[in-house]
Image (cartoon, rainbow, N blue to C red; front, side, top):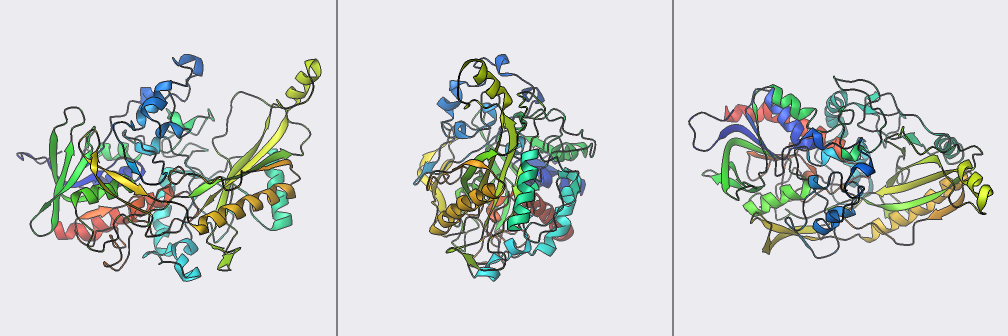
Amino acid sequence: MPQVGSAVPTFDAIVVGSGATGGWAAKKLTEAGMRVALVEAGAALNKKDFTEHTSPWQMPYLGMSPKVLKDRPIQGRCYACTEYNSKWFVSDVENPYTQEKPFWWIRQRIVGGRSLSWGRQSYRMSALDLAGASHDGYDVDWPITYSEMVPYYEEVERYVGISGRAENLPQLPDSIFLPPMEFTCGETKLRDAVKAKMNRTVTMGRTAILTKNHNGRAACHYCGPCERGCNTNSYFSSPGTTIADAQKTGRMTLFTDAPVARILMRDGGKAQGIEYIDARTREAKRIHAKFIVMCASTLESTRLLMNSKIANSSGVLGTHLMDHIYQAGVSGIMPIAEAKPWAGMPRRPNGIYIPRFRNLKEKSTNGFIRGYGYQGGSSPGFNFGAPGFGPNYKEAVRKGLWSINIGAWGECLARKENRVEIDTTRVDAYGIPVLKINAEWGDNEKKLWRDAVEQGAEMLAAAGATEIRKAAPDNFSVPGFCIHETGTARMGNDPKTSVFNKYCQSHDVENVFCTDGAVWVSSGCQNPTLTMMAITVRTCDYIVREYAKKIA
């Protein structure tokens, strides 16, 4: 609870943002005995809004409301933003930003943030990912090593529950796993062929969805549309797990509808607290604390630092923006005679994963460095493209066929020219200056993307697939749309070239921390959320073990 008798509510810590990282920060700090204010820009979550079991005919517009695109022209591009849950996503009208080049910024403002609708693919970064510069000479290594990260990965994995298969690959370290989901026949055929003919691994996706009861949560029942919520908490989201644990301590106070405008400073160069805008009244309010942990998401945390005009003695704040380049896809038909398609449930909420195989020992391939991994799947479906008409056509449709598709997620190099800054001419609905984003793919990403398309086609051909289709030439994804944005407030040992140190503590303002994707040095090709959570746990352990002694 807030400190009694204070005109401004005062806590030990303020955590900005309630998503995957913010939930972990609230859990770790409250369980260590601290009084925490968890500040969320969006509304409180009502589990009645979970619609994973709602059918289209139960929706006013059959799940396709035109209002989604009217108020959310950017958010509506995301498959997860629909009539079912569009209010979880920001209104682009009320929350604008400036794009100097196309950049689709997908944002959710609700307790739980994007942890409600993320894809839940959960992969560790490897020693190679964290020390890429030592391998190929580009940019700099992370200030933390894989061996330092292992215990924090393990703590997150034991709590969250990650289903997957152990493969013993150095470029994709194994996690602590729950039982994996099963391959389909088409995926098994691809796995066997690719291993035998190309010595590459096809594994089951590693996902934060339970395959057995775990930590008081029920195993997944395969209903399918995870992006619309999960009443059984079988998938990982912060409200039903980390935030719930923090609330149980009695030491967390949740502030909702509270977009943070700036960090308040006091004499001595330390932060005093935050100023937020009450979204319902538009009144500016304050909260004070001994220290602040920013978990607002990559670009929101950097926007907060910039609007606060702090933590940029290095001059690199806002630079080195990254996202994964993707949509490098290929598809085909697998040579499996019996399909038996079925349109109903169960629907496995997962797919296959093909780990990075490029530039593991060599520095570069075909003129590019770093690498990519694939996600995809194979399943039987109705053959609506069958020839003929009448009874023969109906029979051919019902007989079905096995489709297969894989698409690559590629590493984006950290480049200083990919950057964000404050647009001094625009504000959002709460009067807070907005971001101006300037980012585009470089030659390395484009070469990597093209190689992934060709290699994907070769792998499908090795498995005997026919009618192979490749992504249209140079049809690159729009930056930001992979929703894996990282960078812009990188960590490092040198205050002249980084914003935060190895414990995600500001070089300039010692009682300000950040543990979301803003602090990343390089992107790897793996989905980032598992690593973000592990970094948060590591930082909170440091705060409890070392920093708290200074402010006791």
